[in-house]
Image 1 (cartoon, rainbow, N blue to C red):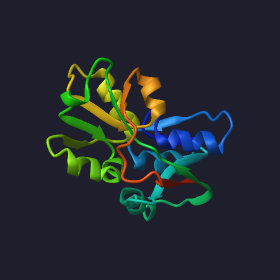
Image 2 (cartoon, rainbow, N blue to C red):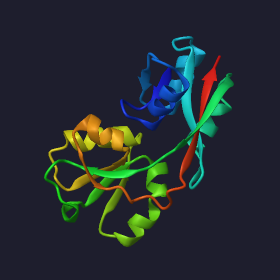
Image 3 (spheres, rainbow, N blue to C red):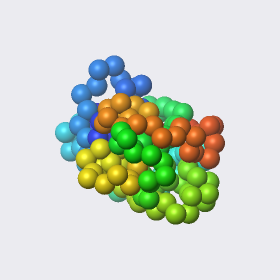
Length: 176
């Protein structure tokens, strides 16, 4: 099953809900998921297509017109973002937060109240957590899942950063 991102990505969590013991191939970009399915490298691909708070995942919709596939299944998942940083880092030190543009949008109220913190877009929330864990900086954090805190050895600075607790993303499972 092709998923965009890396270990801990919400797409991987959706994949785990749809399949028991899937063999996952991670792709750097959404297009890689489409290409892996179209070429036969993977039988299925998992993609986020819409979020209850932030709307359509435009990049995925833009790619849908370029590939031949069908939707085999879908799953709606509650998405809960947490603010993650290296052990020993305090919230007052944070000057930049990495995450996917959808997650940043779903936490827009947090950024309105913390104008001193820069939001930086990266490929997905799990990659954001991975970047923070590998960074030499102590002023960066990631908006990601609680699962990624454990996976990448990060501490949870806050679990109340998203605009609403009623935050759901619909993922589709595509096939050739």
